[in-house]
Image 1 (cartoon, helix red, strand yellow):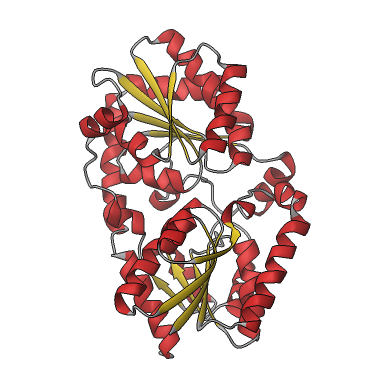
Image 2 (image 1 turned 90 degrees about the vertical axis):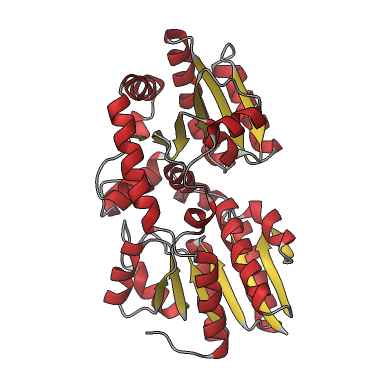
Length: 382
């Protein structure tokens, strides 16, 4: 039997882990998996040791508020895996949590892989030295990431992004709108405030207020939102009732990708969702707010001028970024109105998104599974 330990810290990591496990099980039916994950990993056969939502926290001050709880979970996982060593441990994203755990396990003789490169190309490049001590292999989702690991002699592989393999090249807008009961003859704007409650609390208000402003100026707009679970929807609904009570907006749980597919334009939190929107070829406006302490630290250490993944991949500003003090209802509404009035800008976005999407199609789940099996079997990497 092959024993595998996994820690995924949020919804995107849960998706990546489930795809990886499904490919591993195809190659070896006798697999035992345990760790931290969500519903997808549980359905793929993983025994859940701690609920994933306890790790889903963003920002330096936000993490500090939960430091002792997170440390307790991490220490218990270390002790568990050292006492019951897996053949390999895979940390999926969540670098501040996983890299420490990976180093401890690797020092105890357990092979470790980190899936999803931390953003060392964006800020805190010095973390590469810590990564080199923590992992036997790092799996990269984006083509530009290998250069920095090669520079520091860290074993790595570019596997592509699973979402690029899974999402349709051309979205079926009519089918998505029919499923969600959305009018076919209106301009649909999706509001996606993020998957973490900490994000929703910071970003929902400016998104909803911006929507209310634009709706008052254009009666052909139809708003829709996708939330990951009922708790997120309840939080979003409470904020909506408080700041934009007259705004008409349909809300759906667990159908975020379908909401994206149905939309003409998306206003969303920075993160993995911007990649999904790009793969769906959807014009977007990116919003984000961090605590002021986190923001100042990020600004001091940042190496690149962009936050949204489409802009980072393109190396230029393809989509508007409304961050921190620019994440206001007025600015967001203004950017939305620009897209509504500029067919040329919308079409150019879609063309560039198509080019970037093709670069990420590598059959990532299979590539990652093969790399994991080679590590287990003791093969060396170039």
